[in-house]
Amino acid sequence: MKRCPDKSLSDILCYNSSSTLQASRWRWRSSKKKPTFKIVAFLFFFFFFIGISVRLKWLTKSAIHADRPQNATCPQHFRWIHEDLRPWRETGITREMVEGARRTAHFRVVIMDGRVYVEKYRGSIQTRDLFTMWGLLQLVRWYPQKLPDLELMFDCDDRPVVQSKDFLDPKAGPPPLFRYCSDDSSLDIVFPDWSFWGWGEINIKPWRKVLEDIKEGNKRTKWKERVPFAYWKGNPHVDPSRRDLLKCNLTQHQNWDTLLYSQDWDKESKEGYKQSNLEDQCTHRYKIYIEGWAWSVSEKYIMSCDSMTLYVKPRFFDFFIRGMLPLQHFWPINDRSKCSSLKFAVEWGNNHTSQAQAIGEDGSKYLHENLKMELVYDYMFHLLNEYSKLLKFRPSVPAGAVELRPEMMIGAAKGLHKKFMENSLETSPNKAELCGLPPHDPTVLREFENKKLNALKQVEAWEKDYWENERKGN
Ligand SMILES: *[C@@H]1O[C@H](CO)[C@@H](O)[C@H](O)[C@H]1NC(C)=O
Ligand SMILES: *[C@@H]1O[C@H](CO)[C@@H](O)[C@H](O)[C@H]1NC(C)=O
Ligand SMILES: *[C@@H]1O[C@H](CO)[C@@H](O)[C@H](O)[C@H]1NC(C)=O
Image (tube, rainbow, N blue to C red):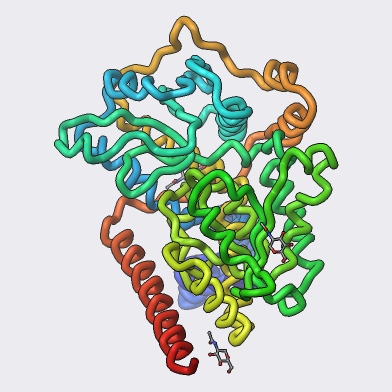
């Protein structure tokens, strides 16, 4: 009669269930007189009832645990939320500080009673501003009634502008400004970029769909059958460092094991983007990531291909790359000697195919699992939630603000933009648990940074050895 279906259940709970109780009762009873049938029946049902209720209660409890496990801890990169908000930990955020961020902001966002209001100051590049607002609106639909009231400033331009050197005094109160990337000498707060809900101008679908497509694409060409070269396709004209990369292209006179292609968006748009399907670009063993004028949106598409990403040393970071490690999720490339660094990486990978494949797949796995849309929303939620805790004033909707509503935004959009909004509309609230934000822990971050640094030094040392040997050999 006694069963303990859940092995992990503590012994005590199993012990307390009906049969044991009955058994001990029987022993106690039998030591006295033989009980009458009525008493036996009464006691039987009495304890049976108690047993059932104990068991039922326990069952409900375990059912809850099975359906909704303890909130899973958020992925590594969430830890930097605390780091991004550190400048205001002691002082809090005053209205004056927020107003100070208006100088460069494209718009102000107010979230109040679960509604989203926007006061727009200037137009952004393409539809970055619209799709960022759209993303915020979807967050509120994804987690209705959960977001606290708040007010923030958003800047849609590429490069961070709030320099730490201007705010060295701990009481300086830098303006809290949200944008898509930052760097080590800036205090801008990083937030997911617009492309997670689609990038209409170049036909990049909402991230949820892209992830599915790339997953399919990855199955098409097995790693070992992929072209054993480093591959990059993009716009080389946005930054000197990309023009520098072009020097490494394969020619009749040099072979750095690297193939580079210019992306001509005008031409592709006329041809209906047939050449730029992301899922068709997972055909090389190694894919190069290099920043543009700032961080590049291309990063997540490059890294989700199962190819080993050759990550040219960056200056900027977006919100998720901070949780990833060289040699585990990507291969670092020296930005001052790109060609020789690329050549070494490709040769190493072709000599150690299983390891290179593992790095490629681990990097992609990080994105497919830790950057799935659910967790992009969780990042936004936790960041905004922590931010709102710091506000020292009551948010209010300015007179010039407009409430964002999906019908209104979809109604105003055209073509691909309209389609991508329709496709990325969150139609029902999230039912799963929010992931648990790990507490602020500078030690963990420092350890992580050390690990990163050691991996970089390791690759640098290998490269140096290799090229020294090559020189000696020649
Ligand atoms: C790089 O080389 C390949 C093959 O030689 C060529 O097709 C391609 O156009 C070159 N890329 C650039 C940007 O010149
Ligand atoms: C790859 O293997 C070849 C042949 O064994 C060797 O000469 C070369 O140095 C290796 N390169 C790297 C980067 O491991
Ligand atoms: C766990 O999930 C619940 C419900 O989604 C949420 O209210 C709570 O804040 C989460 N816990 C943590 C530590 O984030």
